[in-house]
Amino acid sequence: DVKVTQSSRYLVKRTGEKVFLECVQDMDHENMFWYRQDPGLGLRLIYFSYDVKMKEKGDIPEGYSVSREKKERFSLILESASTNQTSMYLCASSFAARGGNQPQHFGDGTRLSIL
Amino acid sequence: DAKTTQPNSMESNEEEPVHLPCNHSTISGTDYIHWYRQLPSQGPEYVIHGLTSNVNNRMASLAIAEDRKSSTLILHRATLRDAAVYYCILRTSYGNKLVFGAGTILRVKS
Image (cartoon, rainbow over the protein chains, first blue to last red):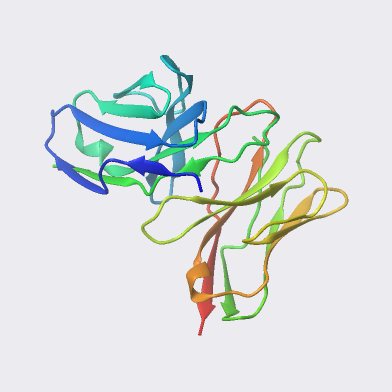
């Protein structure tokens, strides 16, 4: 089975801190994704990466950056955490999309609270 | 992204089959139909996907209407562990992101 592992299930940080969320997948997937999930808003794509050192902005990239130095690892960085970034963060991975035929596999999420 | 419509909630008895409907009348010819579910306090879990033909896997079956404007996810024997939010999503041939709607909350009674 595909395993997507997020480094923390719960995280509490303070406003202004630089926050790192880590994600590792073990299936040699080319694509990796970061979403955030908020009540009433569903899942929204922050960034995705289709190869090492390659990234593309999703729908809500402001206030975030990402890093992919190795194929199996994709990091989400909150440059200066703010309270409106309190959310559930979900990492996913997939093989390169070929006509929409590739499912995405998700980690269990990190529930981040910014105080 | 083409839109899908699902009932807000459904209820089932344990060990009975469950049919979860999804309407997608604006689907294009190259859109795949994907189903995911999300259990409480977990990330979404891939269930099944298909293009035109019905599909079966160890988790569920997917029945796709001949005109592809609707589909049904079938859980053959619901268990309490199947209580979750079920999402029907259309994947375009060029898009990478998944667009999750509100989904259907499935409640399973013992």
